[in-house]
Length: 144
Image (cartoon, rainbow, N blue to C red; front, side, top):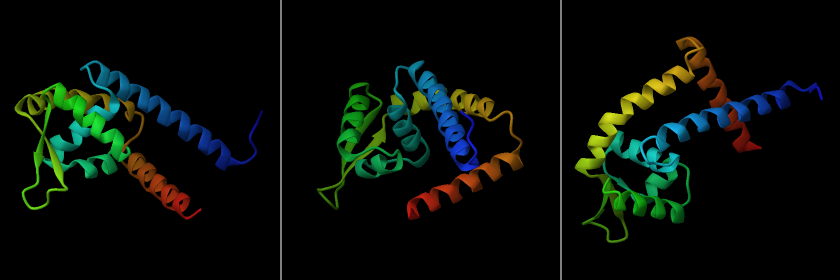
């Protein structure tokens, strides 16, 4: 079946590319005993430091009940600890343990190189143009 509408073709290509990238991330995370969501949470904490658990869920695009489960798993692995907020008892932070920081310092450069290989077919201008285009599409989709 040939698609006459380039927008429909673009959706198919975008979804297939996203699936392929997700498979790379899943394989990369699994090599270190993590799933992609755990890796995303660790990456956020590694780059941005202590975060309220609810904010982690929003930033890594998972719901609040799931982020609690993810943080529980990372705590059991001794990669993350929960820290109560002294100003607001309703807020609990997550932060990397020394073990979590050491792990991320070791594996993040490898992960970054893997992602660089995924995008290796694009030059910097093409990557920027892709980002700009995807942002436009995302904003437009929110309005639909």
